[in-house]
Every structure is written in C-alpha cells, then in structure tokens.
Image 1 (cartoon, protein in one colour):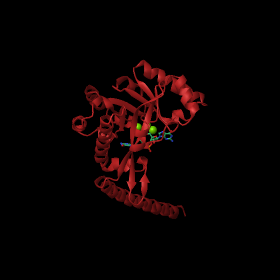
Image 2 (cartoon, helix red, strand yellow):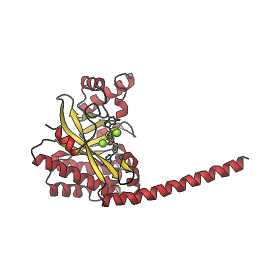
Image 3 (tube, protein in one colour):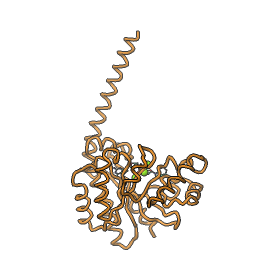
Image 4 (tube, protein in one colour):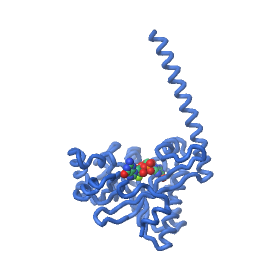
Length: 275
Ligand code: C2E
Ligand code: MG
Ligand code: MG
Ligand code: MG
C-alpha cells in the first residue's frame, strides 16, 4: 500500500541520513588529522596575460593527499571544511604556504608575479581577518602588492556592507581582490558597482562554448566591456582550446587561465616554466 511504501521510503531516507552523518563525522575527524599532519599541498596554475602572452601570476589550488584515500580534490572536502569551521585552519595554512613559497621564489630571483588565494565566506567573516592577513604577510616578508584574494558571490551575499568594509581595508593595504566564478551565483550588477575589486573572473561555464554559442559570446563580450568601463580586468577561467584563446583575445579579454596553457602544477614544475 501507499502507506507501506511511504514507511519504506522514510526508512531508506533515515538510513541515508545516518550514512551521511557518519561520513560527515569521519570526514571531520580526518580533516582535523590532515591539518595536524600536513597532508595538504598547494598546486599553482599560471595566469596568462593574453595580450603579452606571458605569465602574470598564479592561483594557489589546494589538494589533499589522504594517507588511505589518495588525492582528494578541493570540491570533495572544502564544503565539509566549511561546515565544521576547519576551513579557518586550512585557509591560514594556504595563505601562509602560498606566501612563503612566493617570498622564497622572489628571493631566489624568479619573477612569479601575483599569487591568488581563494577564500571561503566563513574565512572572510572571521574577526581580525585583516589584522591576521597583515600579520602573516609581514612575518613572511612578502610585499602586499603580490597578493590577490579571490572571493565569490557567496561571500558578498551574506552581508554586502560588511564585505565592502573589509575589502576596502585590504585594498588600503595594497592587496588586490578578484571576484571568482562570476556569473554562476546570485550575480548582481549592484555588486560590481559597489565592491572595490580589481579582477572579474568569468566562470568556465561561459568559456566552454564561447566559440560556438551566440549567447555566450554576447554575454562574455558585454561583461568584458562593462568590466573595462568600471576599471576592472577580466580573467577567463577554464580556457581549454586554441580557438577559445584566440576568440577571447579578439574580444579584449585581459587574462586567462586553463588547461590550454597549463594545468595546476606542483611548485617545482611551476617554477620551471617561469623562465
Ligand atoms: P576555482 O577557484 O574557481 O578554481 C578553478 C578550478 O578550475 C580549479 O579546480 C582548476 O583546477 C580548474 N581549472 C582550471 N583550468 C581548467 C580547465 O581548463 N578545465 C577544467 N575542466 N578545469 C580547469 P580545483 O583545483 O579542483 O578547485 C576547485 C575549487 O575549490 C576552486 O575553484 C575553489 O573554489 C576551491 N579551492 C581550491 N583551493 C582552495 C583553497 O585553498 N581555499 C579555498 N577556500 N577554496 C579552494
Ligand atoms: Mg579561484
Ligand atoms: Mg574560479
Ligand atoms: Mg570556477
């Protein structure tokens, strides 16, 4: 009967919830363990100036080398890290590691340019965030002009005015800001008007079909124009083909990132392609 089927459905639902709960607790434990045991590693994906065809920096992308499960991509653990608050420790580690690496390269005479670091909404909301970032940079001795912080629309959504205040403080220190994955969330032109940002990162979903889809072309062209008119540089994410690269150049996209140039690279491989 429908009632029995309903009961059965409920039971399955409960079992699923139970499994998810166990997985969540397991993940939380191993994330904590991972932080303590240094199981995370940063890869660096070059960001290319499309006009000059040169590397103008990189984005630090985290990976987790789990002792049993092997390499885990960020999308599989960042959400749990956010829910559990462990993202604050991971974020601190990421910022310190990326900046230390950059300082090291600069001291050795390389010119790695800017380092972009992703920041979750939860990290962004921390009290003393600005002070902490300042402290980290000064202790490492990396000049503030090298750092770009990437935030997403989720961060803004929580509290626009607070976001503007924090970004203004970071900007005053000389740190640049990028709005990541633009166009996937609750994008609003109001944000673009109010936020003190430097870079707009067009999400890969616009780039995928930009050489064949009229609508993607219209949107991309229009966003690039708009961004330029309000003083922002545009980064195209996920450039995979030469056609995409050529097209984006013709419509004046400033910067690009993607497998067509390089996948995210381990530090020792990134530094090799710098010269
Ligand atoms: P994101 O910041 O938008 O990073 C770009 C993602 O696109 C990266 O995935 C990168 O490897 C991938 N990608 C770059 N070029 C191409 C391409 O041509 N084709 C395809 N298919 N993919 C490309 P990844 O490394 O798996 O990172 C996923 C997301 O995880 C990031 O998206 C970011 O939101 C988050 N994330 C990564 N590292 C950190 C971190 O240290 N802290 C925080 N809070 N989030 C991070
Ligand atoms: Mg990013
Ligand atoms: Mg992105
Ligand atoms: Mg993205």
